[in-house]
Amino acid sequence: VVQLQNLAHTTESLDKTVPFYRDVLGLPLNGTRDPLAQQPQKLDEEMSKFTATKGMSFRAATFRIPNAAFGFELTEFTGGQRKPVRPNIQDIGSVTLALQVRDIEKLMTELKAAGTTLVTVGGAPVNPSGNPNSKLREIVVRDPDGFFVELQQPDPLPASAANTTGSILGASVQFSIEDSATTVTFLH
Image 1 (cartoon, rainbow, N blue to C red):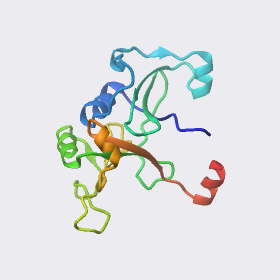
Image 2 (cartoon, helix red, strand yellow):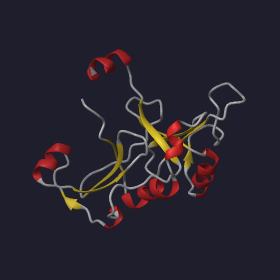
Image 3 (tube, one colour):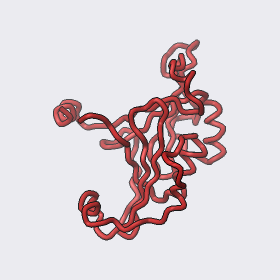
């Protein structure tokens, strides 16, 4: 493995989920074409085999994440059987996109205005450091499909924040797993 290219997340509808990431969180889209103007395309035989989605159509939107070595891809499959999945954060196999943000209070205003589901008890960012003087704040929310997004305002802000415009400063991916030893063996 050389690098993580994109974290892919399947959505019910790009029309509903792209605006959450683009307009509410402020992630920039890759490319100049509007992914919502694109019509789903039938998958060719090789892509159908690759995704095990014979006969389905597909469209996608990819976001750039500042200061991250990977992108975030939303995928939409149509024309076949699908079912929504809404795991709890502690459920084996759940995934969280963790975004470092410049100003969590500003984002909270946007999230609340958009009717975002807040997972963190109390619906407000918490300071997990135990230091009352720390400006570190974190909150977990669900996107329109129920996918977990952790927003973290680090303290201090990373040096890269000075060269980054917008709300998002970086990202990582978190996985809930059943057994660390088994997962580490698989990854190695």
